[in-house]
Structure formats: structure tokens, C-alpha cells
Image 1 (cartoon, each protein chain N blue to C red):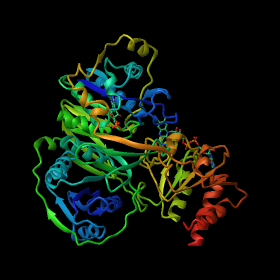
Image 2: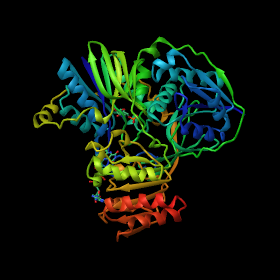
Image 3: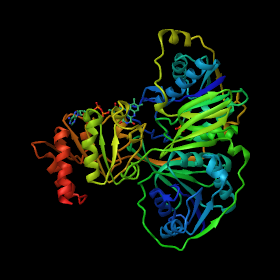
Image 4: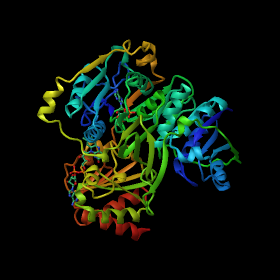
Length: 317
Length: 259
Ligand SMILES: Cc1cc2nc3c(=O)[nH]c(=O)nc-3n(C[C@H](O)[C@H](O)[C@H](O)COP(=O)(O)OP(=O)(O)OC[C@H]3O[C@@H](n4cnc5c(N)ncnc54)[C@H](O)[C@@H]3O)c2cc1C
Ligand SMILES: Nc1ncnc2c1ncn2[C@@H]1O[C@H](COP(=O)(O)O)[C@@H](O)[C@H]1O
């Protein structure tokens, strides 16, 4: 069987769940070969990647890769497309992932499809576009298909393999090292799961009324081990940090459960959460369009309903 | 400093977007075309940089005839000139083909900085800036929440999954900006009047010296096989809170085996 190149998404040694989802998806196409850029690849990580079916873990850890964003990764991916002739390249649909994929596509004369939610054995891709209102099947018609995959779309499932590690030395051009990382700021993410990866997302909008109002949202989120999201009205007002915005100009989430509190459901907000499996709504306006998406909705004051729900969940656990 | 800003006309975000049955392309005629909201931040950033350091801002767009209105709208914020690549052969271009056209239109014009929005609200790919940088062999500093220029030294805060990175590079460079970078200005009446007289270069694929086969559907390296509207969701249950709304939701979640 031929190889499928999977670009690992990780933060140092912390493997993002999307990486395991990519490997799971890759198994339908061929032998998953993981490319690990930068630091953090330990024996444990190799074993974890193997547990999901990675046959090999290629590690490219050098100053050129660690100190310069995007362009070095694209050169390595392009050189592996050349030397491995994989049937496809799978990358996470994150800012970095998409850009490495984009530059590699141009270098290697390969077509690219972004935001896949499913990949068939023949590399036909399913996308969910226009805020989830349309399902599209597309394919790459030139070169090796380069496909970026949305987090939380392909459920990760183990299929153990004894993966081997192979350190690779790829020389990075001077041109790819023209942008230099001077400093990295990691914003404390706290104990909550990451927004795009979370199984449950609890969101608040303008109805939350102010930054303090997010207290009840966070309490509910913690009772469900959920991530907290926010509408743009809430992030624009500075009530909640921008990186938690859900929607067209924020993150796209697709959790098992999405609880929208005090959010009216503007089309741009729906674009970021419409593919959630189960949607629960709390809003005091029965006419709010978000109720159209609700599997279960309560017309009421979120300051009464949300704390009661959090308490009830904690009680039942 | 000479700055180019690439902007795209997109269907109004409030409109329902649909693909056309005939060729699986976005039906752009059925909705109003507006300036991609995220590109307004790029225009604003260019204007602020030029106001501080002097120079010129040129707006660049590829799109059908009516994208010219969007180009004028962007110019009316305060830019100096425009470039509009318009050609029937461009229909059906994917990101690869679009980036080829934009790169060709930008090359050889000695721009110090090429600015982009971080994403178009219709295609939502976020790949054009990286592709253009690759084609023009320029350093790429994308998803900027802060841009500083000191002589030829560019310093950018790039938003990451974890916070932000402080990056530096030398001009010329490609930069894309996120929406928290600034507050785009509204075009003034004077700006709108002045925009009507600003020079706009209209270019075809042949003017750029590109073969028609590298653009449009024939130049696309990906294609839509088929598409369908997502089946409408079955209507859910909506109840009015009578003091037990939270308990009722918990019951629902239990019935769904979520808790
Ligand atoms: C180009 C563009 C991109 C955009 N991108 C995004 C995006 O990415 N994400 C996004 O979210 N928006 C986005 N928007 C903005 C979007 O159009 C809406 O303005 C925004 O989603 C509204 O946020 P909201 O629902 O919190 O506020 P509102 O629309 O004001 O709704 C607040 C809701 O709270 C309810 N409420 C008030 N008090 C209570 C209470 N005590 N208990 C219960 N309910 C209460 C009200 O009934 C109301 O329905 C975008 C807009 C544009 C033009
Ligand atoms: N047809 C176009 N003409 C000019 N600029 C474009 C065009 N398409 C995309 N762009 C630019 O590329 C950015 C990213 O677009 P996308 O990769 O489609 O999400 C946009 O914010 C624009 O700045």
C-alpha cells in the first residue's frame, strides 16, 4: 500500500487531537506516515501516533524549523511529496496548517482542498460550506491531493501499529528563513478544553450582559468539562477574549453539544456552529432565530436557567 | 512606501449563499456584492501606515465587472489608485488560479508591502496570502494583530492557536491582518467623490501575459464533483421557563445520553 503523508499538529510534545483524527482518516487511503515538525517528539509521542495507525514518524527538528514559521514546513512537505510520492497529504485546518499546505501546493504543483469533513478512499473530499447549509464533494485534479481537515470531523479511533521514528534532515533555503520568531506569547488557556476540539461548547452572547455575566457561562461549562465560546457581540464589547469567538469571523466548532445562551443566532454566528450535533438554546426572546437550530430550547432568563442547569448536572454526575 | 491591498467582492454575509446547478459555482448574481469585511481591516492598516510614513496605497482586485464597485468602495476609504483584473476567462478560478493572477498583477510594481484580509467570507480558505507570497518569493507574515514598520524592518504580532508570536522580517513582504488590528473608517463624502476620479487600471488575462489555460476552470487544480443542500433539521422542542428550565434541559441531556 502507498503512503499518506500526515502533518502533525502539536504544541511541543502535546499532540493535538486533530493529529489523531488525521491519522484515522489517512488509514482509508494508505499507510499513514506522520511528519513532525520541530521539538517535542518523544518515544511516548511516537507510540501514541502508532496507536492510531502511524507506520512511521518523520521528525524534522532543527533551528531552521523552530525559529521560522510556515515557509520551512512547506519546503519539507514539498520535498516529501517528491521523495515519498504519497497518495495524499493531510493537514489540520488551522492557520498554520492551511498556510503550510498552501505554499506546498504551489511548490509541488498540487491542488488543494481546505476544510474537509470527510475523505473517501479515492481522496474525494466532503466539505460543509456556507455555514453548513450546503454539502459539497470535491476533488483535486492535479498532482497529489493536499487536503486540510477540520478538527472534530473525523472521530479518532485507535488501530495499533509499532510506528518507527526516523529523523530527517532537510536543508531549508535561506529564503524560507526570512521571517524570524523573536518571541512567543502563550496566553494562559486554563483548564478548559480547546474550543475547536471540545466535545461540548457553552457560549454566551450579548444577553450575558457584561464580563461578569460570563461567570454563569463558565460555571455551566465547567460542570460539563466544556469549552466556553462567545458571539461577536460579546467579544467586540470586550466581555470575553476574542480567541473564543464562534462564527464566520471566529472559530468554527462542531461539538457533540452546543449550548447557546443569550445569542440571537445571526447568520454569521450560525456559520460557526451549525454543524454541532445537538444544539440547546436559552434565550428570553421566543422569536430569536437561534431557536430554528435548537434540538431543545428554553424561552427564559439565562440568569435563572443556566445556574439551575449547572447545579442539576453537577448533582446528576 | 508603496502598499498594495488585495480585496475581494463577496456576497453580502446576510444573504443565503447557494451554488448554481449548472456549473457548481457560487451564485454571485443572486446576492448583493460587498467588500469582504475582513479586507476593510487591511485597507485601514495600509492607510494608517501611509499616514504615518508617507507613500501610496493601491487597491487590487480580481473579479467580474461589478467587482469594480467594491474596488471604488475600498478606494473611497482613502486609497490612491486601483487595479482591477477582469476577464471572462477568470470564472471558475480556484485559489491556485486566483493566486497566479494576483501574483502576476503585483509583480514588478515594487510594492514594499502587500496586504490581505485574513480570510474571504465566501471561500473561507485563508490560503491566498500564503500562495501569493510563495509565487512572488516574498516573506509572509500573516494573521497579524499588530503591524509596525521601522524603515525596512517589519515587526508583526501573529495570532496563533496559543496566543501570539512576535515576528520580524525585512520589506518587501506579504502581510494578512485579523479583525482586531484596527477599526476601519467609513468612507467620507469627500472620499467617495474623490474615488470616482482616482485612476483604476483595468487588466485582462492577456494584459498580464498569462495563458488563458492557467486561469479559470481550466487553470483550477480542484473541482466540485457534486453538491446538495443539507437536509433541514427536524424541528426541536422549545419550552417556556416556568422555574424549571434548567432541570428540563438536564432531563433532555440525560435522554440524549450526554449526561
Ligand atoms: C461580516 C460579519 C461577520 C460577523 N462574524 C461574526 C462571528 O464570527 N460570530 C458572531 O457571533 N457574530 C458575527 N457577526 C455579528 C452578527 O451579525 C451578530 O451581530 C452577532 O452574532 C450578535 O451577537 P448576539 O447574538 O450575542 O447579540 P444579539 O443579536 O444582540 O442577541 C442577544 C440575544 O440575547 C437575548 N437575551 C438578552 N438578555 C437575555 C437574558 N437575560 N436571558 C436570555 N436571553 C437574553 C436576546 O433575546 C437576544 O436574542 C458578524 C457580522 C458581520 C457583518
Ligand atoms: N479575487 C480576489 N481578488 C483580490 N484579492 C483576493 C481575491 N480573493 C482573495 N483575495 C484576498 O485573499 C484573502 C484571503 O482569501 P481566501 O484565501 O479566499 O480566504 C482575502 O481576504 C483577500 O485579501
